Length: 537
Image 1 (cartoon, helix red, strand yellow):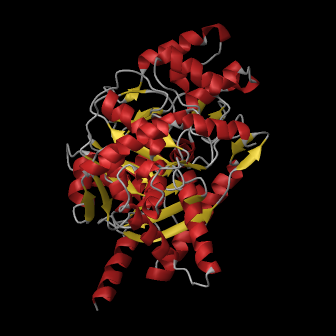
Image 2 (tube, helix red, strand yellow):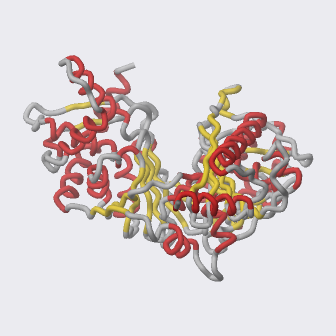
Image 3 (tube, one colour):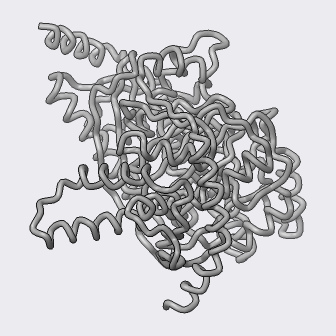
């Protein structure tokens, strides 16, 4: 009976619009979630898509963007109809997010001037280096301003005609609401943010304008950037045209409130409850990135650190590394092959769990073993290419426990170097890091290794959220439900995560000591990795 009563209440909530819709455009999947006023997911819709390499530019076509959005929304409404027997005619609010950065430039008629240039393109090195030097502030290649300035350096004909440029999330929001706005977290991947004003940095805008003064363009940078909003601000309403673009059946009504569009980094911070200062999150899987919410500006610019903001405008330092568990996974698959050769059936979950736990029995410094899981280049350590590598001295302690331990340690080698800049050089204090991703699947092992690497307590939630689509839905809920003066962090703690169970592990001093010994070996051995790259073509 209880389930039926819940279903009736849910049906009524959907019919009366007491729900919120969040949609996120990831690199390989567009995902929509419908959420109730307790932030519980009622239904999900998805659409898989892939980027294309066109004229050496990674892109998604406008046709793919809109067909993907419409198909994703229809998939959601189909599941709502199947589960609850009702159609969605309205919701309390809508939020959009997407993969951050990139470049979408439009003329004064609203026409796209060149194909969408995604975050994945590494074609802006010259612009990135020149702007970093000019601003004394690290400008990564994937940022929108790097793309614009590279187009200027390349003397691309379209630049003269730019009337507005934005990101994918900003573009979708603009077409559905008519508003040229961005959430501050997403905006921080377009151009540096002044954390005092929570707006684009005016001094740097002037520096950029001086830099291009001789080009005599008809536009000024501040005129073609979107307006910056913070979490909780209203970012417009769904227009009649927007409602038809989203729902091709014409069932969805116009006039729905929309929250500021955000990037996937910001929605990830919301989904992991790591928007408060002195908190952060680490996502560890095929690649690894860590984000730390800062209390103040860093003393200087670092190539290893990207600076973005939370959706409510706190400064965030981000360390991103290309390699994490790929080589570790390859070794575990080798053990699987051995099992099968011996005529044994393999339970992969049990194999991973057994080998990960074995690593905890190893010597604190991995017994003198060394490995690099570099499947690709690694920016933090200065590699354009990588070669997976395992090496040891004849007298090293070559045991299974040490072998597994060194591969877990090295998966976090590059990220530790970046985090050491933050925590040791810049004296950034973190009360807690929240872990998510495949490395944390085996209970407590990944947590303990990460805690050792960065010497900060690591928590993992027992129930993972629905990722970025859920994160942007929560931001939409915050906009319509927040009490006066209630901060985003307070809202998340009191209303969203109060009932979430998590497991927290403190750094073990012996593990921390062992990782410090290992990281010295790791840094000293980088010349071995470099020789492997040079000699193994």
